[in-house]
Amino acid sequence: MLSRASLRTLTVSRHFSTSARRETKVAVLGAGGGIGQPLSLLLKSDPLVSSLSLYDIRGAPGVAADVSHVDTASEVKGYAADQLDQALEGVKVVVIPAGVPRKPGMTRDDLFNTNASIVRDLAASVGRVAPDAHILVISNPVNSTVPIVAETLKKLGVFDPRKLFGVTTLDVVRAARFVGEITNKEPSETPITVVGGHSGPTIVPLLSQNAAAKGVNGEVYEKVVHRIQYGGDEVVKAKDGAGSATLSMAYAGAKFTNSLLRGLNGEKGVITPTFVKSPLYEDKGIEFFSSNVELGPNGVEKIHPVGPLSAEEEKLLEACIPELKKNIEKGKAFVAQSA
Ligand code: NAI
Image (cartoon, rainbow, N blue to C red; front, top):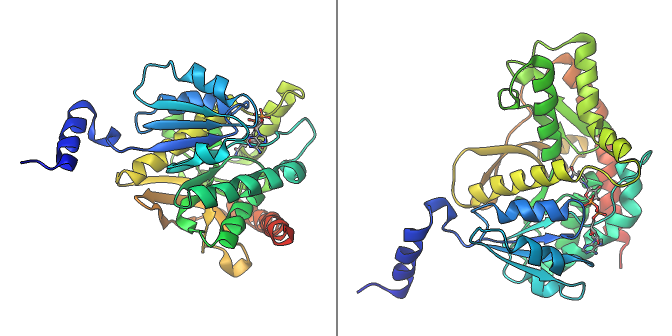
């Protein structure tokens, strides 16, 4: 006679592929926003998401009602401003795009004053209600908001460095696209590892490690590196006060979430850059750093070193380190000063 559990497995496996079998509840905090809405839509289309919990201080129930009509199997629920705890119940992955975006002329650091407390408070709720959840931080400045989440969870005694990620995927997406354009290749042929952090000078693309990109040099090299580092500004400028990248960011956020879910489901060899607590530059006082990370059943499985660098890349990394250090310290100090 079959146990109830094995009967359930049998029934479930008849309907879904192995990879889609896991019950994975994903929450989006900030689901009503420019990123949150298309991100929620893309996550609704991801077969690895079994349940979607959409929260915002405004508009999430409407987004949920809309997205819930898409003909995929996952359940969708929307939660209003006073329902954060309910939104977080049982979630395995929390994606955070809550907060204000840039306007022309602003740096990501200019968002600190508003977004730091939003992210701190959301992280505290996640730590209390869903302490085992994996947290994916999109809200800027990522170089500071990730340390803010870490320090907040430490205060609650629930920080697991394998489960906290700054989403830097948009830099990776842009790099593949821009380098593909200038080398006349498909972006799939020009995957570029981007290391460091997520703000102008801390974004360090490693063109020398890609066969098609390593021949790019001189002015063309300088220009494409600058475009990868400051690609966000193009969008901010073109939107002329109406915000920053939302659609490409939603794409990048959904892409990273899918990579994590594949890793959590036991798929081997899922490797992508992400901003995590990292030993790579600890000797330089850098606690968090983005490099290629292998994702596995517990989140961060293995942090890869940056690999061989060209002379130009060594210089970019040198410029990245002090800025990144400053951003990380600012985040940590903010939580230390918080009551
Ligand atoms: P948006 O203003 O369109 O949306 C933000 C949403 O957050 C709004 O719906 C707002 O109601 C909500 N919100 C504010 N406080 C909240 C709270 N306490 N709890 C829940 N929701 C709250 O902004 P957008 O364009 O969606 O950008 C969001 C963030 O993502 C910004 O900080 C932006 O800088 C960042 N970003 C990050 C990128 C990355 O590569 N990591 C790329 C592009 C943007």
